Length: 92
Image (cartoon, rainbow, N blue to C red):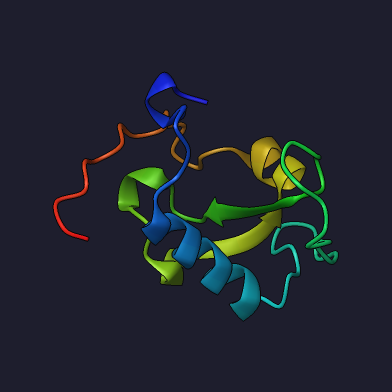
């Protein structure tokens, strides 16, 4: 995890993440197996959201899919890009 993300995620990301997990019915889009919602980070089979086109394209749910943490880490960013710097919130 980047030092910039050490404080955790934003509310907007947590909402988007939950939306994607629910939309995908907690099924990993990378391996096809169910994601147990009771498993917590850093468990390798805990819930994660994969950026299909890469993080540089943002957090549009159309380009996100539910994934196990391990599956997501194994695939990585399709464009081999590092995590983008977090953007400051300008509105709440």
